[in-house]
Every structure is written in structure tokens, then in C-alpha cells.
Length: 227
Image (cartoon, rainbow, N blue to C red; front, side, top):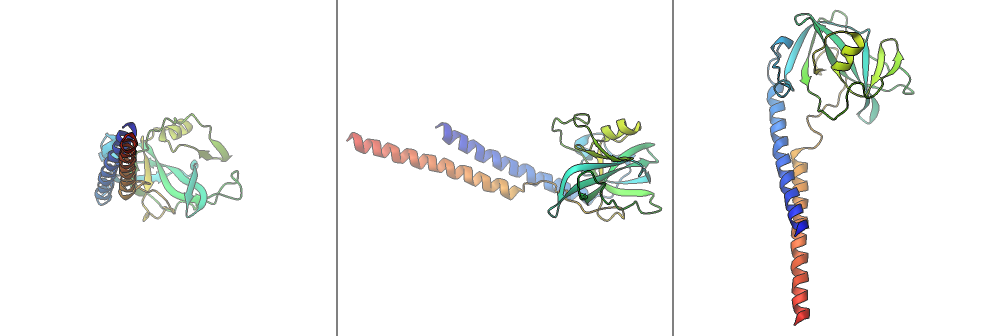
């Protein structure tokens, strides 16, 4: 009875997760087609801001580069490149994720980072609200590769603010692929699609059915033995 109830509950939990992923993908698709807004027009709520297209006006500060560790794109290991961008109208900085660069020969080598296009005065992308996983900006010491280049474990504007002594927007801006300073990226909305959750739900329900069949077979066998 315990396993029967457990397997059924797990099956329905996977179905609920599938519904949540459907809503997540629909919301992301709807927001991706919205016209970009300025940083000042972004809602204060993290849920309302997540995935919202934005257009920043100002300039990059390439003197400080943060490399987000442990990224993999097309089976290559490397980093996401995050560069501060001074937003003129908000008079604060935003941490912009340009995308992926492969690691150098060793982890201690500064990777080849394409320079910011000359004359860049804007950045077009979307807001990424990172999931809270318990890791705080100061939990892992950054690795300094060169002047102004640091490897970090968490893409945190709070850490960038502490490092540079500047005010930062609290969420990362992921640069659009069409932006001239955009790099290759792997930023899926979710790593597990609704179909996978439904497949897991079917497996749990089949295991519950197997428990019922085994239980019934055992009960019939006992009755036959008792007779």
C-alpha cells in the first residue's frame, strides 16, 4: 500500500511539473516577442521581469570582465563572458552576459574574448533572474587570471557591485543573439521539457500498476495455498 500510494503521487507530481513547464515555455515565448523596454520601465517584481526584453543605452566597461565557470556549448568547455554596462538613463550598471567562449589551453589561460564592437552605445537582450540555490556571491573566491579578468562561480551583479564599488541592476542581462556583441550561447528556458515529465509520470503509473498486479497475484496464490 505504501509503494502504491507513493508511485501514484509521484506520477501526479510529474504531471503537475509538466503543466508548470508548459506555462513557463508559453510565458517565455510571449515575452520574447514583446518590444524591448528601458531599464527604468522594468517591473520591480523578479517574476514579472524575468525574460523581459530590454534595450540599454550607454557604454560597456571592458576594463572588468567576469567569466562564469563550467559552461558547455557544442561539447566544448568554457565560460560565459559577463561585462559591466553603464546605463546612462538609469545612472547605474548592468551586468551583461555576452555568451560563451571556449577555455584556453589550461584553466589559468585567459581565453580569447572577442572585443566589444567599436562605437557600441547600446545593448539589446533580456533579463535573466537566476534561481536561488543557496550560493551567495562571497561563498566562492574568484580566480584572477589577469588585470580585470576574474573567473566566478555565480553570475552575480551583487558581486560585481562589490568588486567595482558601483551600483548595479540586481539581475543579469542576457545579450540577444542578434546583438553585434553577442556570442554563442546555450541558455535553454528549461533543461527538461514537458514531454519528459509526462514520460516519467507514465513510468510511475506503470510501477503502481505493477504493484497492484503483484499484490493481486500474491493474494490469489495465498488463497490457493490455503485451500
